[in-house]
Amino acid sequence: MGFEQVLAVLVAAVCVALLVRLAVGPQRRARLDRVFWRVWGRVEAHAKQLWQQLRYGRSSRRQAQQMFDELRQRSRDGAATPPRAGVKREGNVYTPERFKGSAKSPDKN
Image (cartoon, rainbow, N blue to C red; front, side):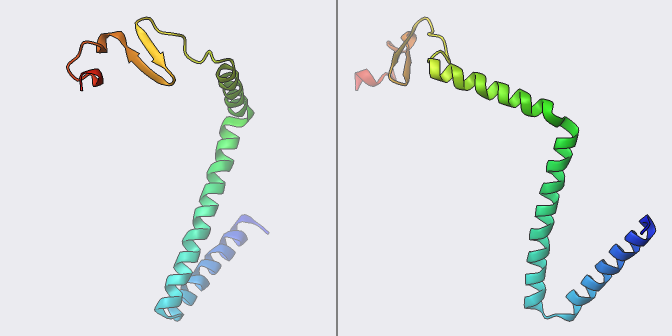
């Protein structure tokens, strides 16, 4: 089967689908439209995923895995962020020293 024959079959299938859509009532037409758009979304997502794999290949996947491993190791070691000068930490709340004398300080309430 050549390219022209495949193209002719696809055009004929689209024409038949559009004729069927015209022949059915409005409720079934709406349901067919929803099914079509759902299938089209899946086909589009699959095509994008395939394009990304062909375009970037294994190198991007390898780089992402290396970055993930590095961040996971840093979080396990507790060295994700170095301590900062002039900042007091209580749990996961950072309080800069320069905020102590401000008018909006919660200590003055």
